[in-house]
Length: 311
Length: 306
Ligand SMILES: Nc1ncnc2c1ncn2[C@@H]1O[C@H](COP(=O)(O)OP(=O)(O)O)[C@@H](O)[C@H]1O
Ligand SMILES: Nc1ncnc2c1ncn2[C@@H]1O[C@H](COP(=O)(O)OP(=O)(O)O)[C@@H](O)[C@H]1O
Ligand SMILES: [Mg+2]
Ligand SMILES: [Mg+2]
Image (tube, rainbow over all chains, first blue to last red):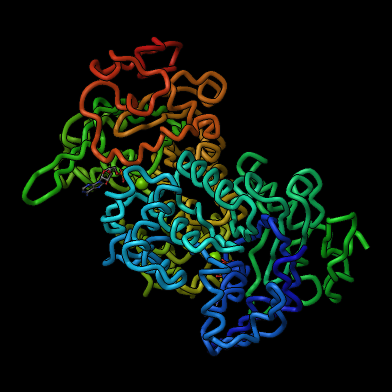
């Protein structure tokens, strides 16, 4: 059964230079206990999608569409109702722990604060729970560590603390935004293993540009390009049988797949290319691709692609 | 081309209780003319410090650096300045190495002006030539760094570096801040330029796969020491040091006791890798291993192997 259903979502930012069409248009479902990977290059709209779900975008943002979660359209909730869901039902583990952990608060206190807010525990109990959470993300000597400030933690430890904070209220849906970015390989693998463990029996939207990491964790993968999805498939199918020329190009540019780059650059989200958004960089583009915008079509069961090569 | 012998760089930190960080703790290696040596290791292991020491952007604590027969550490400031153009460094973040208020064209012209010898028209010609060499468009000349993407700015950095005709380039994680497809473009460009301009390269990265594609030989670094050095094949097919194996297949070394990050202080006696090593013995904690050549050009720092 589906836990989260996004339909016809558009997120636009009015700016001096014009309207930035960060999301245009996304339809997506996340099932109960599904771990869905969202991959795509910098600036394609991954973080904005995550932020739209927990509604942390600035008020001037233009949002259209629906985001259904357990029978409610999140986009229609009041800020007060949303506050009860954010952190408790849906938690976002943000990119860049250095900026999202408060530098002047002890790590344990930060986690305890989140717990107190949502679970109505008293200070002492919240504090005990915080230490428990640090232990669950395998931070050594957690009761001692809880009394330290974020700058005393290494990169991998900070990421663990962020995960502990995200999980503190036992959410049903975790949105993890590039949690392994900038970490060394061995530490990255440890975080991947941890995320896999803690997301068991939960749903997760796992945002990353690291395909290697996505394959370790995710059941399905959605590939995003310039504000929309261009391919959706089971994780192994994305590797074995990538259909969209962008997905193929993305795979081929990985160091262990031969370092063959995709020519050109990601398009501006203010001035999107006509027709298929990938056509200026695509080796298979025909006249039709420059004019018509291809729809997302299910080619095999559970494998959809937005490309005229297959329709 | 480059010969480094027992290079050390200690930093002292702390105001009350002085503490020495042995950022680079006795490393030796050579790079042949036209060769690319990859230097790989986790963040904080001392890679950037080696790069900066080679150019004397920082003063090494001890050791010997010979560049093309010249003993760098005994050069006077003035002699060093004359040598500078021949050795160049590219850093991870292109935005930080470009002046944000300078147009791209002026940025590339700057080193040419500093070097002297060319008039205005010649400089302009040379800039256009460099712009084309690194795959930018003529219209980019009048733009500012913020108007270009990270990948394009890294091309500008490459153009600036090539402007002074260097022999030796240190590339310090030049693509770590870029997306994979852009990374592929820049790495391919670097390989192409290396051949075209007959460059010698020290290629620094924390990504072993990237280093594999760029290098002839690879040096693996851990906590201030080079623990293994060998050809790409030797490192990938016949790695001897336990740490090299950890990097090659990180999934196999995921035991929870390996939460080593906690140990901020360097291991002071014995082998640097001792606390994380799955094969460690009592001796390893006491006796410091020595670099041993186990095959031609294949060196390992591990007593258990040698
Ligand atoms: N508040 C904002 N105002 C204007 N543009 C924005 C804003 N937030 C994000 N964007 C733009 O939206 C696009 C998508 O951004 P983001 O979701 O952060 O990308 P990523 O896929 O790298 O996470 C980018 O082009 C970004 O510049
Ligand atoms: N200027 C400095 N002062 C004090 N410590 C430094 C300085 N530069 C680097 N270090 C320390 O030296 C070690 C090696 O750093 P670095 O060479 O930057 O590593 P890498 O490039 O491999 O990530 C680190 O512990 C770092 O904190
Ligand atoms: Mg993002
Ligand atoms: Mg560095």
